[in-house]
Length: 118
Image 1 (cartoon, rainbow, N blue to C red):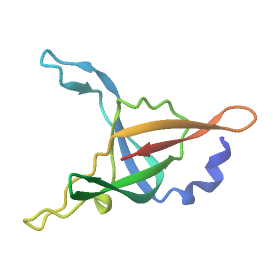
Image 2 (image 1 turned 90 degrees about the horizontal axis):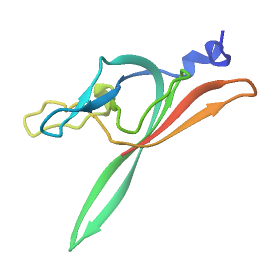
Image 3 (image 1 turned 45 degrees about the vertical axis):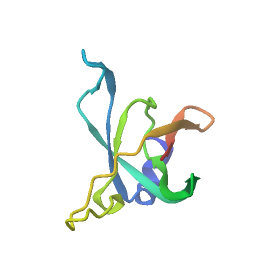
Image 4 (image 1 turned 30 degrees about the vertical axis):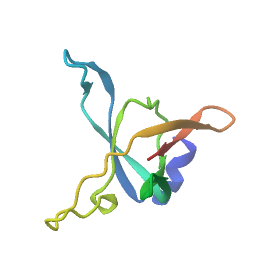
């Protein structure tokens, strides 16, 4: 039983991670089967301006409630509540780019991972 077993209620969301497996012949990334993990997601944003145009880009800090290895090339899918509304009224699935992965350790072992995305 890991340290986080007693605090899983602090991870109210579920995310899916598909491991990067390589590239196909056209250079497109390929992924393995996705696995679902408990997580806590914090959403922020940053503003990018260039040539008189400005855009607000969402950024996420995702706390994974499991000890696992995540590669920045893996595909992360967030819950629908973190998607964006389309012009037709639907909601897009949010698949942010993983920018950095920080494993978190206690004195003995890795206990969780923090993913910085955006």
